[in-house]
Image (cartoon, rainbow, N blue to C red; front, side):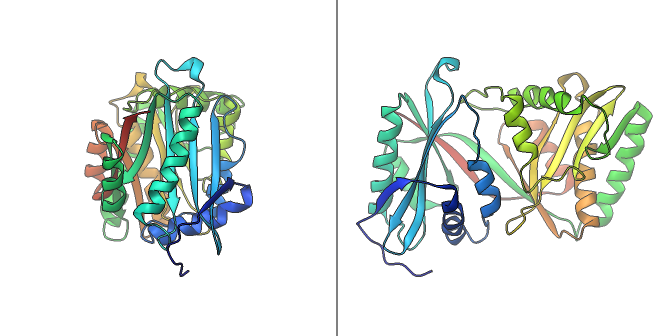
Length: 323
């Protein structure tokens, strides 16, 4: 797609059918990290009822060339009104002037909605974006580390580690199985409770607000997730851990979507065993490499990534500024 940088950009409310063009713009911007349009469309559909989200398609003469988003959780559940803003522009129109135009508008929408502190994200190597955000008054709040694991080069060692973890789990009375194999009628309620507890322990400046059961079930319906590839750990009659890789249906990297365990069972190698099951399965499916990301202060999972052989790739930063 070849575009000239233009000054006459326009915004209109985004529709679900815009997801493909937005994913194409994001992929053109970072071809090393493609965005799947089917997964993006799913993320747009049926958000948390207590969450406020506004998405605007960015229009230029050829059509949709990007997206502006502002979102926040229920103000009544937040001591500080954090509001997230995002701008995606196709590289053909991604000039400083056009980024400034887009941020001016989406930040103002967020302020009008009541935001007190604006939050956005940038990749560590995106000098244009980070320099522009710094000039706009944003400062780095947190860093997110990104990792990649070569399943071909590490196949033998990973399969040995997975076998050892299975033996260790069996000795502890912990069963490892996929959600498709789990027939407990309470499994989804247990997973929802596990998810809520685990999310509270992910380091974050912006508070994690509990998701409703319906929104949690929507996560399980994500096109990249498969019940026969989502691994759970059971002890007695309770699900105590989960780990899942997301497999984008059209394009993108297979990557860890979520790994967590109940606080009461941490330190016993359960998260390790679950992550190893996901990568062992990916190896069997012929996947060459997988990715994951974690907050830079999440020491246990960072240590686990290093043990498994993940290597660091370009990460991301979270930035804040007073509205």
